[in-house]
Length: 85
Length: 289
Image 1 (cartoon, helix red, strand yellow):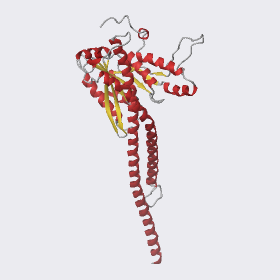
Image 2 (cartoon, helix red, strand yellow; image 1 turned 180 degrees about the horizontal axis):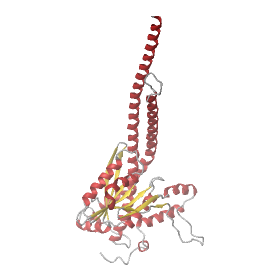
Image 3 (tube, one colour; image 1 turned 135 degrees about the vertical axis):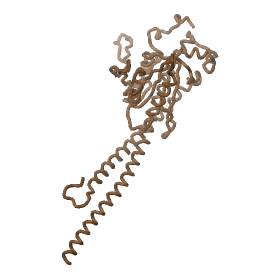
Image 4 (tube, one colour; image 1 turned 60 degrees about the vertical axis):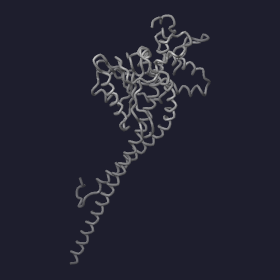
C-alpha cells in the first residue's frame, strides 16, 4: 500500500495523532458553551498525571502533565487565549 | 507489664488493646463507607463508557492470540493501597503475558499506570519497563486526561500490539482481570488479509478522500484511547469495590478481636475482685479467730 502522500490530512502532516486532534476540537467546542454549562464542562477537561520514562532499568525524573495548553490563532483580531485552564 | 505495687493482675493492658482495636474498627468502617459512596458515582460512568469500545470490537474483532514482534503491555493498577488483591492479580496477568510474548525475536515492554503496579514490577522486570504513570486519580477520571495520556504513550512507545490489562468490574464483589488487544495499523492490515472479522473491513465503503490505511490508523488510535478510558474507569470501580470488601472484613475481624478481648478483660477483672474479697475475708476471720 503506497501513495500516502496525496491525501494525508493537515493534522497528520503536522505530527498530531487522531486523538490529539479530536482533543483540540473538543476543547474548542467546550469553549463555545454558555456560562452554566461552560463551568460544568470545564470540570470534564482537567488533566493531571505524572509520567516518568524509564531507560535501562532506571527511572528518569517524572514530569507532571497539568494542563494541555492550546493556543489558537486570534479570531477577530483578539489575542490568542488559553483554551484549557 | 503490670504497674508497680499491684497485687493482682492488671486489666490496664487489656483495656489499652481494646481501645486501639475499637479505633481501628471505626476507621475501617469509615473507609468502607467512603469507598461505597465513591463507587456509586464511578459505577454509572463506567457502565456508560462500555459503549465506547463495543463498536470497535464489532468492527475489528478481538485478536488476543496475534503473534507480533513488539508487544507493549499496558497495566492499569491503583495508586493507593488497602484494596485487597486486585493489583497483585493484574501484575500476575501482566507477568504471564510478558512471558508468553517474549521469545527469540519478539520482545515485550511494560507501560505501568499506578504506583502499586510499578512497585511490584520493578522488583523483577526493571529493564522491561518503558514508562510509568502515577497520580491519575487526583481529579475524577475524564476522557480528556486519558486521551492526553494515550497520545503520550502512542508517541513515545513503539508497538505492534498493545495489550491493556485491567480488572473488569462485574459486581461489587467480583472483579475479573481482563486483557484487550489493540493492533497497530500495519499489523491490522496484515491480519485483514488473513481473513476473520478484520477481513470483512473491505466490505465497507470508505467515504471522503481517505485511504484504508489512514482510516485504520485513526481507528487504531481512537480504539486505544477508548479502551484505555474504559479500562481506567473499570479498574477504579474494582479498586473501590475491593477496598469496600477489604475494609468490611477488617472491621469484622476487629469486632471479633474486641469480643475476645472483652472476655479476657472480664475474666481478669472478676479474678482480681475474687482475690481481693478472699484477702479481706481471710484477714477479717484471722482477726476474729
